[in-house]
Length: 361
Ligand code: PMV
Image (cartoon, rainbow, N blue to C red; front, side):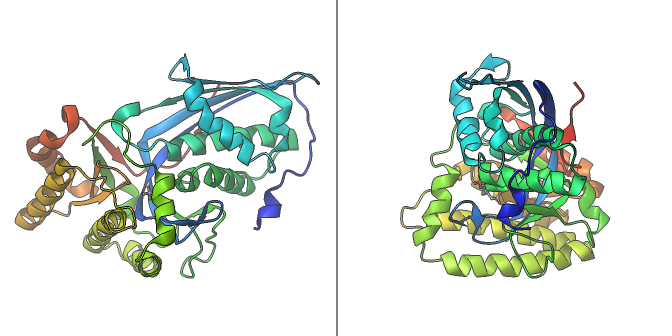
């Protein structure tokens, strides 16, 4: 589908009030998206695992605006009015206006909360923007008189992408691809697609324990990080490498090759951070404890032959990846050896999840 296919086609119903809520998860990329073209078009395709425990719950209440009334948009974060958080939602609404012009006809009250601590350094944009996009799609669905699921979720992913690229992938459970790639036939730069066929069941229940290494905000936003690729000496080779890794990962997922999966995840994570450190204005998001964890994981793997691997996001936290069969052993290792590197000993036990859930109101 092309961009014009997502323009709202017309109103069937015009309710005075609509209230809708969605819970949407975060995701962790195995092949990373880093670098974009124009308005949120990825420079390379990416593949992620959708998480479960780390999620955002968003409720949107819409009240029809009388003509002449100024539109009100009120934003509550974790129960308190939070205009500073509302700014992101507000600019998102401006950006998607062309695709959902009816949003201007309503006063909006947006209430949102995260399952993870706000200052944990876990990116909330993927879960937050996907939850908001789904709420807006539920409103559109009501106005348009009902969509089929395929279009509903595809447009939700399209809208979420405009808010935050990685959010496009949170719309679907399990394994998700965003960005055109010849090995993934349905893939698109405009929205993510679920990658369900030929995925070995070992990846359906994969674990991701997120070690919270550093609380507080990052020294550089992901927007600035993506922009750094525009004048980066290694950009072209990175995009080529990401394309190759997508092809490899497709085969690895089909074969259920956990070792190859983990090695690829680690290479991608280190390449992401190497790009940050080798750009025209270098920056470092890892902390000493990030490196201490990486070293400990690799050492433990070597000594015990346990299939445990790491990946990183654009931050200092470390995601520990492992299959269910070694869960107890790895959790003991984390408690015994890794927790000392976490800020306030905090970590979150997450795993692959089934995607967003519409909330009963
Ligand atoms: O969605 P953004 O713009 O916050 O970018 C996310 C970038 C990474 O998390 C580093 C990688 C990815 O693909 O999720």
